[in-house]
Length: 255
Image 1: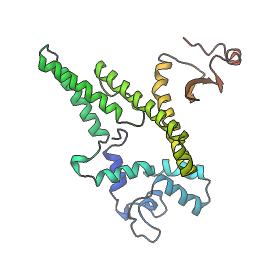
Image 2: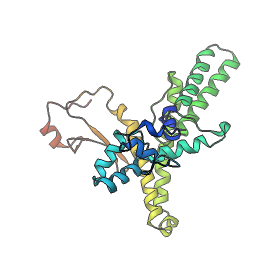
Image 3: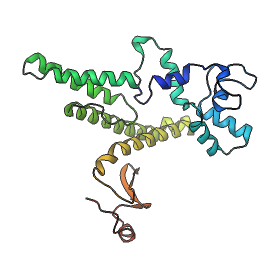
Image 4: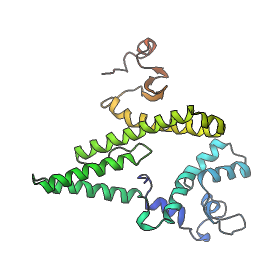
């Protein structure tokens, strides 16, 4: 389930446009067709298109990545692989994209509103809605703000979602220190470390709106996970450092 990817993104990965629709020099043409005009089996991803620009036009990797992301419809490799796998998965087993995810969320919200009475059946239906909302939160590996309009459902979703992200961090830490990972080699160790850092970043995204709910500053605070703890930095300095207060006493005010 990837709520960030919609039907339009799936079309970008799966529906080849006519060759005559683009000039051969455009990035969109290169994404779908080889230099000799033959169609690619799959369109180039952002990473592959950037590598091609670096090799053929001598661009820096940074500039090539920027062009691939901004001047074409190329998708990141992970997103394109997920969409292609989804298309080839039987319908009854297919993971949800953005539109389908929100249809499900709206249906759960609707069940809650429709069961406002005090009967045993309506109470049971609300409990089922709470469990489903919590389950959805536990299935997402990247931070997603609660899509529910009902406060109780939103709370159930968020609590399980953050709990899942924290458990991912703990599992990755254990994998980093496990002797089996060390014996497997540095590749497995770095994979575990990358998974932990990604989960810590997602926790940071989840917590940042709560840490500064009403903050409107000229100096923008940056929140990051350092050593497993959330830290707040202003102008590159950690919150609470005396140098921060001395450097920007007018602009920063933390409640």
